[in-house]
Length: 316
Image (tube, rainbow, N blue to C red; front, side, top):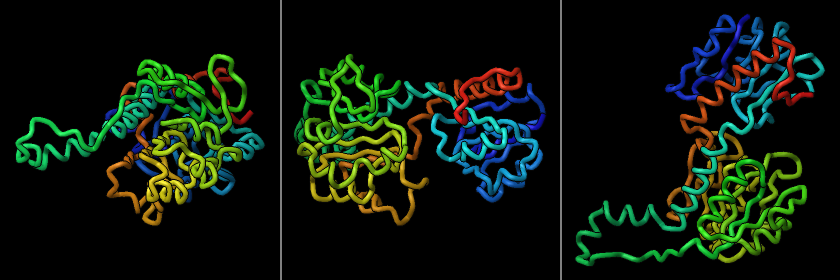
């Protein structure tokens, strides 16, 4: 059996990929373009990948390919219809990064709420020392207790964030597709009208594409803090940029982008010098422990598939 890992660079150099040697020959590529994938998969039985886009253009020649294993939960980069029609299994991994993503979500909220970057810069610049004053309280910051934290999406990650938000004394409201009696559910417009903080945890699909756009943002509560750790295209980047520029949003942080890495033409480039904006490079999922779990789960997906079991299949 031949296993091809197409973009090992996205997994991290600290992770041992030797777990896959038990299945056969393992060929590792640090990065692979969509075009390069066609040649690299010609005689592969198993493809392991994160962000490489796979469709008919690069899968049609992969006559031996039996299973595609995604090192992620999302699978929008794989044409699952083509895979199903051609007998190729597609497996993702769920739940491995819940703690990791929830941790970064809360970290981003706390950093923006407490203006940590400004205070850090004030001390490191020497201004604190020169001031002769024992403290500095500007910019002003506020307690989370009593604030409303809105969650757009309420899967495993959303629920974990909700638990932490409640521990801080926040009121939690949720926008989700199906009713849930355990939490107050509201429409997206109301989520933005009522929330002091909104964190995004919803999958990307036709219904959520650019769901957070100018119309929704125009209804946002004054100085709302928006956090996106889901998929970049859930927000309209131009609309969010304008909302930061005109003061509608009091803070914004994103770990995901509509095209990754963030392009030189992204509207977000206008926000690079804003103290109330934080950009991170799609790393929320990637705590060391989460990536170890991820590799273990992929190994289980491969093992179960070749034993005739159905596990984490997304194309059926």
